[in-house]
Amino acid sequence: MANSHQFLSRRLHSLLGLFPIGIYLIFHLLANHQATKGPEAFNQAVGLIESLPFLIVIEFVIIYIPLLFHAILGIYIAFQAKHNVGSFSYGRNQMFMWQRITGIITLIFIAWHVWETRIQFALGNKELNYQMMADILSNPAMVVFYTIGILSAVFHFSNGIWSFLVHWGITVGPRSQRLATYLTMGIFVVVSFIGLRAMAAFIQ
Image (cartoon, rainbow, N blue to C red):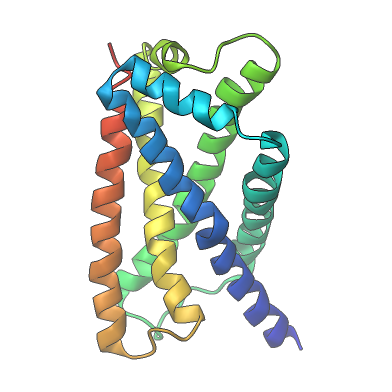
C-alpha cells in the first residue's frame, strides 16, 4: 500500500511539474523576452496578459495552487526518497541530488519574485511594467540572485522532464534514457538562454 501511494504521488508530482507549471515557466520567460524588443514591447505583452478576464482565478488555478502542491509534495518526496545508488549511474544520481537542491532554490526564488512583483502591484506600491524589473535589477546582488534563480528553475524543469519520462514508463531502457538526457540538456540550454537574455534586457 505504501509503495502504491509513493508511486502515485511521484507520478502526480512529475505531472504537475510539466503541466501546468513547466508550460507556464516557458510562457513566462517568453513573455519576459519581449523586453529584448524594448520597454514598449514588454509593457504591451504585460498589458495583454493583465487584460485577460478572471486573471486572478486563472493565476490561482493554473499557477499558484499547482505550484504550492508541487512544492509541498516535492519536499515530502525529497525527505522520503532514497538516492538511487545501484539503479542509475553516478551522473544520474548527481542529477537526482541537484534536482532536490534546485527545487529548494527555485521555491525561494519564486516566492521572492512574486513578492517583489505581483504582490507589490496588488498592494498598489508599484506598476507592473518594464521599469519595475529594471529597478529590481539595478541592484547587482539582484542580478546574481535572478541569474541563480532562473538557472535553478530551468534546470529543475528540464531535469524534471527526464524524471517524468521515467516515472510514466516512456523511457524504460538505457538507450531511451540516454537520448532523454541529451534532449533535456538541450532544453536546459535553450530555455536558459531565453531567460537570461530576457533578464539582461532589463539591466540598464
